[in-house]
Amino acid sequence: MFRSMSFVDGSVHQIGYDIDLELYHRLGNRHDGQTVNKHGL
Image (cartoon, rainbow, N blue to C red):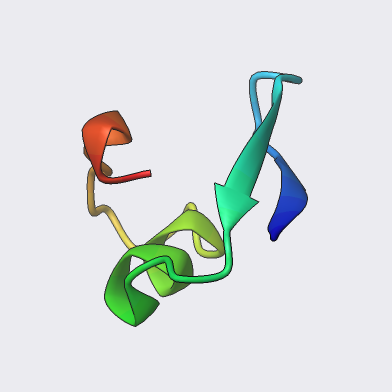
């Protein structure tokens, strides 16, 4: 199963429910200064 997640650039991506929890938290906080590796999605 997947969920849709919108990004600050306006794009929408399908994210699996088995996503790494730390990666999921980074996607939800754009002010933390951390980068996200798109290949982890």
